[in-house]
Image (cartoon, rainbow over all chains, first blue to last red; front, side, top):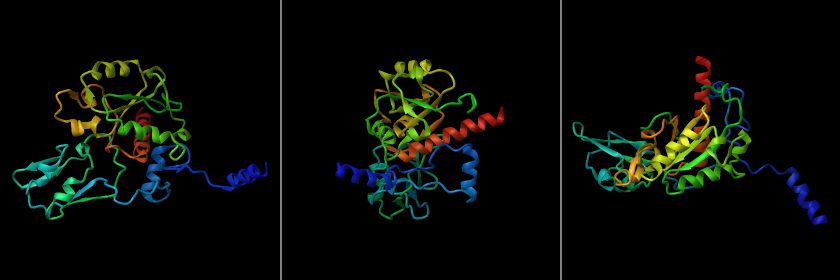
Length: 125
Length: 142
């Protein structure tokens, strides 16, 4: 009996486990909220912290790239197109599986994994 | 269609059109207390006839093409289609499969694409925010 009361009291003062991303409830106007967030007037709750070694969107440094085509060879999802004229590659986010094999194989470190993962959009890339 | 036409909680029907189950697990994860999408009034329903939003995962296999079309037709009309995961938006790793009829947008019109393989639950929630913003913008134009 007392054990239960103890647990009850503990639960009463504990914060809920829910991560309230991006806001606690539905805002009255989403467009207004998004605009306010852009201007820095309002804040949204942060997402759950991502684990170490997370493989997010791949960043491509065009300057560093030497056009060796290794990333194209190693990619299981065919997410790189080769640009013949410039001898560079084009990265397609919507085809990527985020395996980061291209990051491992790139000899000049032109490709790196970022921690970006909020990637929804109205069109494919 | 705008948010005024859809003046209610969005109910969601989930169609698996040949997905590897990674995205499906992430959709279920958004329903868990950690992310708790029910605080926005959303929930998974058992039939497309009750749904406002279709969540489509997976590239469309030959078997699922007709069924996906049918599910889309069964959903009552102010409706939104979200594609979860890269398979649905471009084919992903299955891009050269003999059994692929094409990405989802070749079969039904899609409103929002959530990229990721699989996307994290927050990314799915962000996709929902995008849906909301799109509906509101359509409402303003009217």
